[in-house]
Length: 304
Image (cartoon, rainbow, N blue to C red):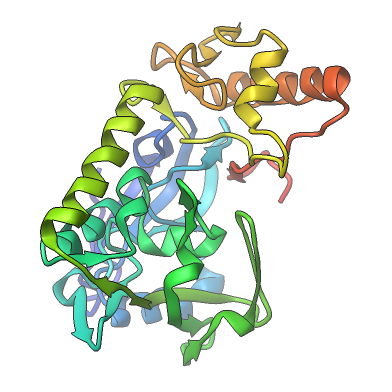
C-alpha cells in the first residue's frame, strides 16, 4: 500500500507495511514498516537527516545477494533503484559518471550500443551500480572496482565526498570503507572505445553462457558462496552430491550447484538459511574447506 509522502519536499515513493520479498531476488522475507525509494539527492538527504526518527535498517539496490529474515522489520528500508534516474550518465574522455541506482545490465548494454568496452561483465549481474560497488561484484574474470576512477558518496551528516579505491580495503567480493557511514551516489567508470559489433558479440556470448549454466527461471540470489582461490564453490558443492538437495522449498539448483533457489516460490527465509548452513557443513566435513557466503543477511532476527 502506498503511503502518503513524508513531506512535500520528498518526491520519492513511500510504502507502508511492505512485503520485503517483493524487493529481493530470492523472494522471501517478512514485512518492513516502511519501504522508501528516494529519487533525488534532496530525498536522500531528508531521510539521512531524520535517520534516528526513521530507524533506517538497510539500504539496498535490486535486492540480489540479500537474505531477509522471516520476521517483520520495525523501521525503514531504503531502495536505491530509482535514485537520480533523471541524470544517469555523463561522458568525458571515456569516463562515464553513473548513478548508483542504475541497473548494471542496462548500463552495460547502453554503453555497448555506443561501442564502449569494459562493462560487458555487468550484463550478467542482476544488481545496481551501487550494489556492485558495495561488494566488488564481478563475473567472468572482471570486477567493478577494476574500472572505477572514483566514487561520489554522502555521509550521514549530509556531506558529499569524492573517494577513490585508496579509501577502501577492496578484495574479492568484499569492500570495507575506511570512512564509515557513507552511501554511494555515483561512480566514474573508465571504459575503452571499441566497436559496437565487438562489444555486442562479447555481451551476447556472456548472456548465452549465463542462460545455459544458470537457473534464471527460478528465484535466487545469484551466486550463494564465494569461490575459493583453487576451486569453485560449485565444484565443491557438487563433490558432496548436493545438487537437487532440498530443505522445504529451498533447493540446490540442478543446473548450477552454487545457486540456492526458492524452488516453488514458497520457501521461507529459515529454509533458505538452513540449506546454506547445511551446504557449508557438508563441504567443510568432506573437503576441509569452509565456504564463505556472498549473501548478506537483512532484517530483524539476524545478527549483523
